[in-house]
Length: 144
Image (tube, rainbow, N blue to C red; front, top):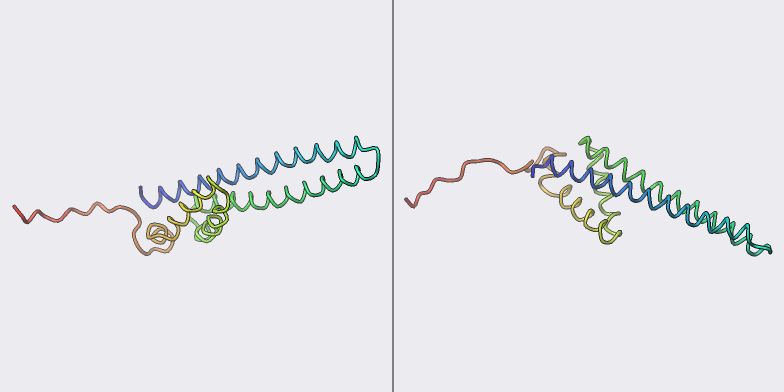
């Protein structure tokens, strides 16, 4: 694979990670939102209503945090696919953050760091190092 192929694949994987993160946030908002509304509606006393309100507030805060992370993943994926220089920096940050999401995020983080900090990524973004496999002719057989 060439550096552009690795870059394209990394961008797609980061976009998928961002979409899955967003989907998780929506699922948590629905689940805890229903639970909080059920506590408020079914609670005959004030303690249950307060608990339901706290659950709703926590659900909204958690979903906002997850939405910010998801937006970071999606923005980074688009910048990497466009080969913009900020994409490499954001890609390194997102790859480090992904390391904590076991097992798929860890694999994405390792792959992203391997590519972006390796010779292929440096060659593509910084213009140094190698940009892929070369098709140089092998040395002649001198033993014949």
